[in-house]
Each structure stands twice: as structure tokens, then as C-alpha cells.
Image (tube, rainbow, N blue to C red; front, side, top):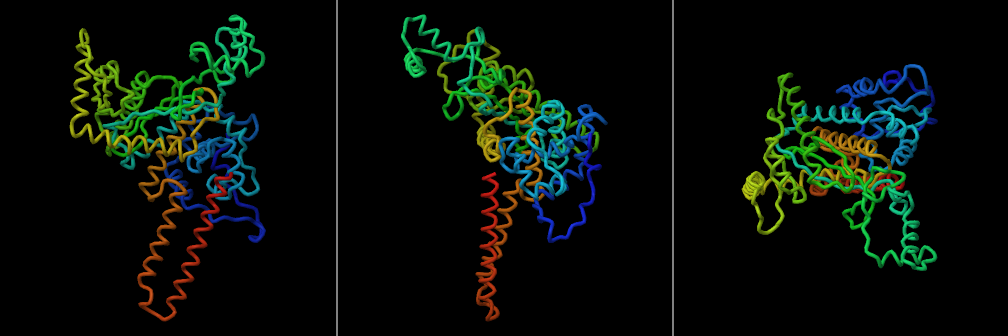
Amino acid sequence: MGTRKQRERQEGLWYEAELPTAPGHPFYKRLNEVLDKAGFDRFCEISCAEFYHEKLGRPSLVPGLYFRVMMIGFFEGLDSERGIAWRLADSLTLRQFLSIGLDEKTPDHVTISRTRRLIAAETHQRIFSWVLERLAQGGLLKGKTIGVDSTTLEANAAMKSIVRRDTGESYGAYLKRLADAEGINAKGAAALLRMDRKRTKKTSNEDWESPSDGEAEITKLKDGRTALAYKAENAVDMETGAIVAVTTHGGASADTATIEETVIEAGIAVAELSAERTAEGNCEVHPGGVEEVVTDKGYHSNDVAVGLQDMGVRSYIAEPDRGPRNWEGKDAAKAAVYANRRRIQGARGKRLQRQRGERVERNFAHQFDTGGLDRLYVRGIKNVHKKFLIQAAACNLALLMRSMYGSGKPKAAYDRAVAAIFAILAVIRALKGCFLPGWSDFHNQVSAYVELYTQVGFFRRLENRTV
């Protein structure tokens, strides 16, 4: 296994005019400083040592570089590993971030994909926990109250390729068999589709599967389309917005069936961090672990209310209007549901429900909308879970960077720089004519530089989107 330390070397002795150079992005420089100071590369190399051989095989992708490469997808808004590889080959700034020399080849998408498949999901979980520990050290994790929510992402499998689980026949062959059984003369694909539109049907996961990704499940996405998908569920600290736990499920899994697993994962993470911080004598993580859970209406059910109560967790679950309820023989469920109803109708419950959109939904926007993971390009629930873990770890790193430097992404850092320049320009305009006669020429020159800087930034963004 190669290490980041072994790869440190001096660049070749070229004339500066012949060598392409880049000033580097200040955000990535600061991010590297944070990671290097905390010993990120050494931790990755120790965690991944079992997956590498000391001598055999071709030169590998260094573990610290691999996890940085995966995080670039979040920071640059790239959805696929192929897109990340193209961006690395095109950017001098990202070469500097990864410490890849100008005479070295950047990792291609095959190397990135193979490294992801090689390293186990448990190791990705350790990297996520390492980043979470940095948040705890920075006072950005409390852990007493968490918000739970989920979203579905389209899998890397097409609905038109699904096959029957019992016979293995395709959807077209299945329709042809139905037509023959009913004596319908349906010749051609168009006739079969017309027949299919008229009949009553239900595409069930018990009957159908994808031959390319058998773990993806058929479900209806939020935009109304029916597709093969996976579900990502996050547990978020309601005080700071840090992602405490990530779980991955099939796209058709009900929220009421997955919340307990997510709450347990969050409780274990908070308890471990609390014990570690207490041993070090500087604990800001809630010592009692997770005590409160805030969710939306999709999680409300008798079993969920009773289950959370049995776990010693107070629930703040928004309750849908179900009308009169029959509680005969359901004393435990009645007590749990009524206790949850009293809490959500109080001032604290209403405040937590308002904050849920700010803390939980905003993380989904960062991870999956602007973070470049609006759909999946990997297959299998283990690979999908790895992507979700690294995406959540990068989102937590963005929170840490935002608390330290005011910017959580390269684009945000650029916007802050432009805002600062325009603030200076506003002051200059306010003071115009108060000093020397040549002040107007100086003001015009500064304005020209600001306009040029803005145009350069626009074309850089356009180039990134094109890639």
C-alpha cells in the first residue's frame, strides 16, 4: 500500500514559464490543513491496511487520496465517479489538493471504482465516525435531540429491464404470455403496450426484480415517477445540523420500519463520542445519549411510538389527521400516542417541528441537490451505503469548515470573496469625491478589476458545470 508520506517528492526542475501553475483554491488549502492537523491520512492508512498487500499488485490509490477523491464529488457537485475522474484530470487546483504531481496521472474512474469495491463498508463507517469525532471536538455535536428523515434516490437500473422472480422472463415476454392466454392477437411491442395500459396491474417487488441490481426496489419517487430506487435515512443533530448516523434501505422500505435502526445507530454514535470526550476531560456531547427524536408524519404509527418509548426516547412525531381511533386492547399504544400528541402540541414541540426543515431538510439539499448525488451510478446496497457515508462525512466536514472559516464549499468561499470586494467598492463609492481630485480615476480602475474578477469566476463555474 502506498502512503501519502511516501509520495511526497520535489517537482522536476522546469523553467516556470514552461510549467503550468495554479494559485490553488484557498478552501482546499484550508481543508487540507484541517485534515493534516488531525492525522487524517495516517488514520485512513491504518484503517485500510488489511485491504492492501505490501508488495504484490500494481501501485494502488492511497487510502487518504481515495477518500479525498470521493469527497470531491460533494464539494464540486459531481454525481459519478467518471465525472470526478474527468474533473481531476482537468484541474490543477484539485491536483494540488490531492498532492498529485504534474507529471503523474490522476486516478481514472476504474481505479476509483475498484478501490471503493475493495474497501469494506465498515471502513467507510469508521471514516464517517472519524469526521464526526472532529465535530465533537469542535463543539458541533450535542446529540440530545435528533431529527430523522429519509429520501429516495433513483438506482442505476432501468425499469424496462426488470424480470419475473419466478420465471426470469422479461416484462415484454410476460405481456406476450398474458395476451396468448387471453386469446388476444397482440402483434408487436406497440400492441402489447396498448393492452398493458388497459389492464389492471401492480408491479410488486415480490414478483419483479432488476437483473443488474437485485437489491434495488420498485417505488414511486418524489417527482411522481415509478423507478428502481434506494432510500437514504439520516439522523441529524437538531442543535448543530451535524449528521449523526446514516442508514441505507431498499427504496420501498416504509419509514415506520426503518426509524428504529437509524435511532439505534445514532444512539450508539453519541454514546461512544460522549465516553471518549468524557475520558479526555472535555465533553460537550450530551452524556445521556439521544433523548429526543423529531420526525414528520410519515413516521407516525402505534408501533413506532411504543418502540421509541421502550427505548427511553421522547418522540416528537407530527401526527396525521386519522379521525376517531379505536383503542380497545391497545393501552400501551394509546398511552404512547397520546404522550407524543401532548409533546408536539406544546411550545417546544412546535419549535422543534419548525427547526426540522432547517436542520434536516437543509442537509438533504446539501447532500443530494447541490452535492451532486441526485441519482446513483453504483449498484448494490453496500456500494450505495458507502457513497451515502462519504457524502455525509463530506457534509459534516463542510459544517466544520463553515464554523472555522465561514465557508463550507469552494463556491461559497468564492461568493464570500466577491461579496467582500463589493463591500469595499461600496465604501469607495460612498467616499467618492471626498479626497484627491484623481479619486474618480482610481474608483473606475477598481470597478474594472471587480468586473473582471466576477467574469473570471463566472467562466470558472461554467467550466465546472460543463465538466
